[in-house]
Length: 225
Image (spheres, one colour):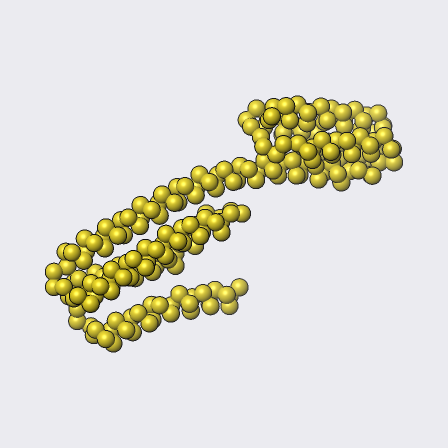
């Protein structure tokens, strides 16, 4: 991990080292304000390219979010690099034009970046909500499946298989009216696990728990359809 970070740092420094060597070796140290303004904006644009991965929302789809934001930052850097080099070559004594143009470019970039960040937040919330919905069905079905075969009673195992099939085929989407019921279903599954694994309850009592759970899942599915 440390080596990977080191390699990325070296790659990030390549442009800065090459650009600054060329800038000072070719142009020297005495420049008008327009050149220093361009120099500063080019470095700012490159810094934003480096920082973009750190402001990307972390999620299972962060690669998609990162690509979008990174594209915005990369485009800004390329445009700024071209504009900055033009003003460096021109070496204008008056800095107003260089400042205005590069401030406008930076302003447009910031608007685009913030817009993408806001859009990513909304998309990220939707994805997170969807992941939670999927997790309920996946977790519930997995827990019930793990109970199949633990009981010596064929009737109980058949009932568990039927319950598993119902949960496994349940819609993953959810809504507010079903949230409370899903919490109750989760509690009932934990209760069923204890009953089956402990083996202290009668077959009829376990079968009744399975039936109640089956009915609760059916009700939940009606609410989300």
